[in-house]
Image (tube, one colour):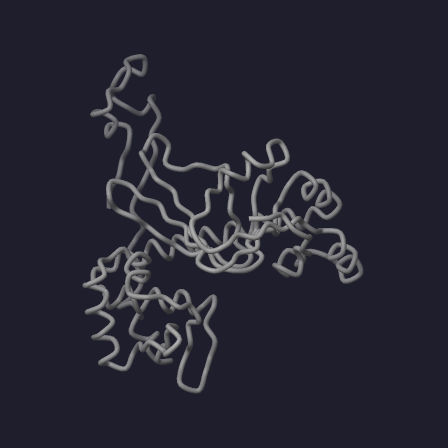
Length: 274
């Protein structure tokens, strides 16, 4: 891993300049830059940024090229999703609270990371809309993760795989005469990790999808979707009313607020109905 040159962030993610005027964009493009770090294939220990750079460590990184698989593991189960160009990685942020989570970044393609540091924050004070656009970028990324979570809840492996491939196609797919190509070389094990399944189950499901001419694997390891197969994911109707979920404070509980709540009693302060 080596720290090299600089990259123009508006070239990496043009939506960062959505709020700029036509006259202001050229100067912002020239000045809103970030140092670039290159990651080789394999596992990446994100914490090493802090160890190497100390107080100069970035508050976040933007993927400027390549692909990272982000995996979280808990109690023998793993959830994996992909980070690509324009996505934000926050190496110093940990998740899960007291849960014994294991976090892994796997560089699936040589990756270039733009380091977002104090210099970037200082420059964006001149163009606050860029900071706002960066926040929207994080929100879009969070929404994609939520969609991925939804896909993992489909009961049938066939549906999970088809939905995943269309989800990836919405971002990376390209139309070809034969259909929609998802230009990610993924084996059955990789897809199993992405849909929260086991490889034998995924292999069987991919076989069924191939027999129906819905999904096929190309010679280079990428995937081809039959254009009309998206309709197979159409819902049966509008969703029902949202569940009534409320977070209650101690004043809403029957217990004396001064009386500490034991772990087994926490349900008394949370209401879920519908």
